[in-house]
Image (cartoon, rainbow, N blue to C red; front, side, top):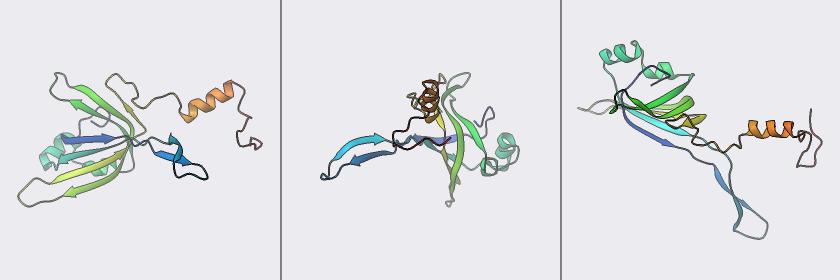
Amino acid sequence: MLGDITVAFAQTVGHQAPFGTEGLYGVGTAKPQEIQQLRVAPAFTLDQFELTTQGMNLLGGGQRLEYILAGTSFEMHVLDGTTNPPTTVISYVGAKCQNMAQNIPTNAPVRTTYSFLALDVLDNNGNSIMDDGHNALNVASFATAAGLAGISNLGLAPVI
């Protein structure tokens, strides 16, 4: 679903959340001194059969999905269609299409794969699966509230 509108029947949905883990090294040793998770970049792919004209009219108002996805961010939800009514399994917040690829075989359905990046991933209760409370905005708010906004750990005067 894009928001609250069903636009495709997915054959496969795969997701990942690379943490940007990197070793930090010191002079004189090849061993890392510390391992840091520097950034989280949630991503997922959606693989679907190409819809017929009738399917596009039913689900997308006659528009191709790649045209709807171009340059726009969405909340995307994966639903469990085996429950009645369908229940949300996982939601992607601020998802933008990164790539679209098609496989056009002979004597088989055309398959389209969409790759997305998302700002956050929510479980079926609406809780972030990545939230550890250390978002840069939260840290800045805490520093301001604690009167620490002018303190720099680089030894440089703060820029205001």
